[in-house]
Amino acid sequence: MRVSMIGAGYVGLTTGVCLAEMGHEVICADIDRDRIAHLNAGSTPFMENGLAEMMSRNVAAGRLAFTDNLPEAVANREIIMIAVGTPKGAAGEADLSFVREAARRIAPHMSPKTVVTLKSTVVVGTAREVREIIAEERGALDFWVTSNPEFLREGSAIHDFLHPDRIVIGADDRDAADRLIELYKPLLRRDVPLVETGTENAELIKYAANAFLALKIGFINDVADLCESIEGDIQAVARGIGLDKRIGPSFLAPGPGYGGSCFPKDTEAFVATGRAHYAPQPLIEAVIDRNAKRRRRIAERILDELQTARRPTVTVLGVAFKADTDDVRESPALYIIPYLQEKGVTVRAFDPWAAANGAKLLPDVEWYNDPYEAAEGAHLTAILTEWNMFRTLDLKLMAERMRKRVLFDCRNILDPETVIEHGFRHLSIGRATLP
Ligand code: NAD
Image 1 (spheres, protein in one colour):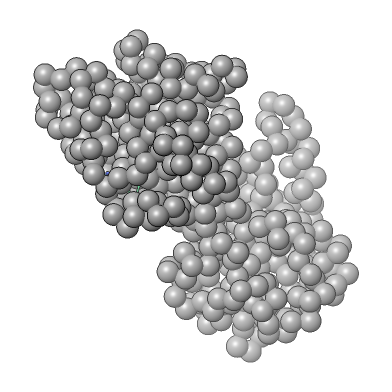
Image 2 (image 1 turned 135 degrees about the vertical axis):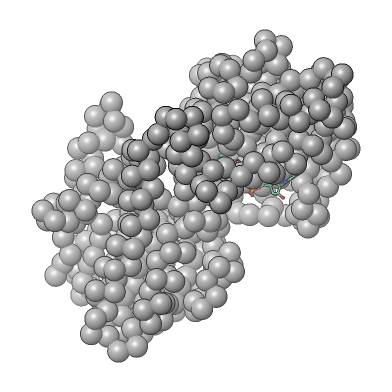
């Protein structure tokens, strides 16, 4: 099928590349000219495992192209996917201005019988609104607007797109739904479950799914706090909970709180949607509040350890909001580091991929090219991102470099006994601090 992707960000680009890999003919359009120039030169605008290789393979095969010319991108396409950003608005609601703008821009150039589908995470009623925007411009045109939310995770985006837990197709018309089913046939043939429903249900599914995942993270973090008070072990407790098939083991890893480009804004948009429709969502309101407090609590625990230090220095390992991405949007590090700096702490940092993005938002941090350089002279090292390379840190070398041997493993990725054996005081989440 001939597909146009509006917005070549994390979701638009990954989806476009994967659809090309599935055999479709895809053109990705973006208003960001630099981004398109880079893509046309063969480089991806962000780090994602396997993306660059798959992209160049499909460009070479003639199935994938990039343009900043929207009219060219949308004419004669069977499907136009909108994958532009939907950031947080002033009052927590989703800011749909990019979606509305994209709809206005594509409308004059759409061919008859096109299916427009919303890949962006959008609030209930947006498909209807986009339909109205296009109809205003092109009253006589025959077209459909559908919803097809995306559930991929940064860091494993390609795998997630090609092996989804389910595909959600929200359409209020049979022909439009069939067009999307045709698009996903290579995946549906492998028995990927299909949820076919109306556009508004599809829109709500995405927000409710993210709200539920955030709830799981918030819950396990609160249980971790309780474990700290009773000198328990959250790792054992989480495993004991997660083996219950009704609960499941994923999203039960305690840590410094959720971040990223989705959970923070999507939970707020979910709450705002609830308010707007007189169906408040107090559970998720509490999750948002707890998550904000969590970052402060981590920073306070670090400060407690620095009380006797003159010119206190902390090494932060990892500023990405999670491993395997260079994305720092809403990362816990963006809250914890400035909080420490305000209290007079010098922060040295290392991140294998996200240092450049981190440096744009954290100007006073000293950046280093490896964890050991970063650890030089520090009173405490805090692991904030669960990068695999931190699991095999050379603790002997870390101990030699640091001024005081205090290690705060905010992701529980190191074995406490091994850390203690190397002479460290070991802090983690949901377990006793030793010695
Ligand atoms: P992003 O910021 O990485 O990319 C958005 C892109 O859209 C940018 O390149 C921007 O230049 C472009 N754009 C904006 N207006 C445009 C227009 N009028 N025409 C063409 N291009 C335009 O955003 P993202 O992380 O890819 O997220 C996109 C949507 O997908 C959001 O709604 C997000 O909530 C949702 N989502 C994101 C993820 C994720 O992991 N990042 C996962 C699932 C869903």
